[in-house]
Image (cartoon, rainbow, N blue to C red):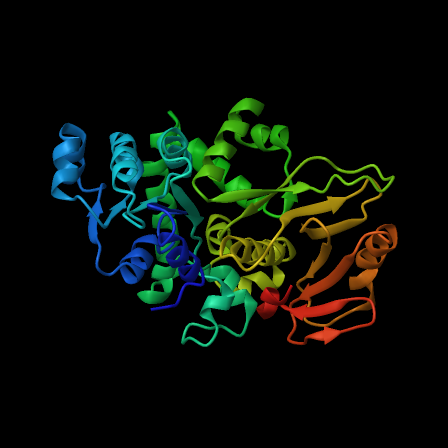
Length: 385
């Protein structure tokens, strides 16, 4: 069992609130985690048709049978449970009474906002991080292996081949989840859309361009991207708007949460292919940005995450704004440090002289260096940011 960093915070808040909600992509390890840290709870899976029908047809009887200390998996499948949970926890005042999980973030959070606001802590569990795999038998010393394989736990726990498992994951996701959220009449077109999005990971989003490549409207492209976002396939990094007397790019950048999924969609079948692939730099950037997102979700990082680019193409790949301090991060896949890696960091530091700004280079090599102006981190140590 790989220890999940988020566990400590989940346990802490389960002693303060009546409901804990854990959401995230399918197969990110939610069920394994809650069973492991809440060993004495009764586990109920609402993907099971018989249990789901019981809950839908007799919600009071359902909770009379399972009345306390229960884990409800895929809770969004029975919307009726949320108002009933509200009634139960308001009457009992018991802490940590219900643990809810779900892979449909939009459907889950919609019901929580209606019934359980103020009664639950919400956690996002992503697949494994590099930090979690350190000091385990699964640790890789080449980042290309991580990028191509990705981080879904089953690939590691069951020693599965990503070439076989990831395409099945994609097909299952489209068949089960996409159809629940929107009515997609042409699933093949949605698959093509997903592949095109993978090719755009790490890039500024252009809805019209993506729509034209698939043959869908701007509005449909926006709708489909929203579906991918709410089911934890992609996320957006928005531009940092602080005015430094520069014309700032205002469109967000698109990233995949899991590079293995992006590689599968781009038909990258082994780590060696990455050495000569046009998307290697974008995939490495996606890999590092996703690791930073995992740190935020796991409670290791405070602040909001952005990117910055101005009209003269000076760019910072990642900015973390914690309110009184900025952290600017440049990401380079090369294994050898070159002086031009620091060009954008130096530029950004010069225009933020009146702001407390730390600058970092995260690169594909092995060293950690404290230089006069900048900190150099290797790809295995993003938790030091």
